[in-house]
Length: 188
Image 1: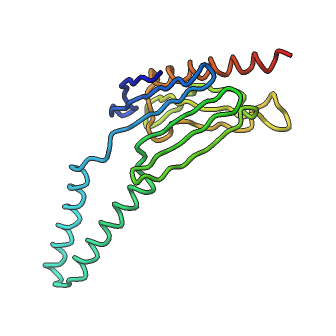
Image 2 (image 1 turned 135 degrees about the horizontal axis):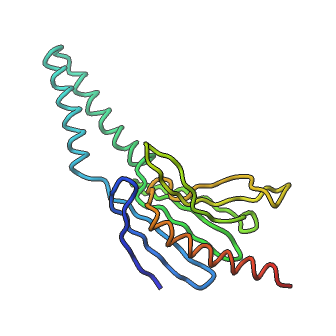
Image 3 (image 1 turned 60 degrees about the vertical axis):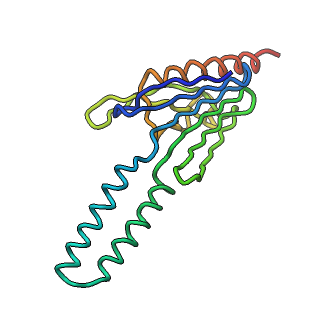
């Protein structure tokens, strides 16, 4: 079963939450943000090139125009490949673990996998960000030496930054799977 719902990020931008239920033991959540706007790319490019043209008319040096074009192209490629994330995905499988994937605008993907026996819990936490209280989903990892303590907190959906209503949808579903996994591991 698959469905999509629309939400907002912490700045008011549109997000799309795609939920896939493969089984009662496996669920996937994909958060997609708005694609790169052609208007913003055009505005930045025109600004850089107009400044370069102004400097060219002052100094009459063609290297200024050439370097402006080169810097703009490199900057755009760097932004698309290393910064702009179009989609973040959380895949939770009952007996296996949790996989987080970030898909960049250039097509590059970054994946992190956490084994289920290392997961202590999934929680919604709060933080102060730019004079606002924001909420974020995070995975608490068990300390290998002291299993009742937390060794690390791994935030989820760092780039898309969804609001609380979206996080609650993902949180409840993760808690269902974690509760089922704890029940099956506790029974002999």
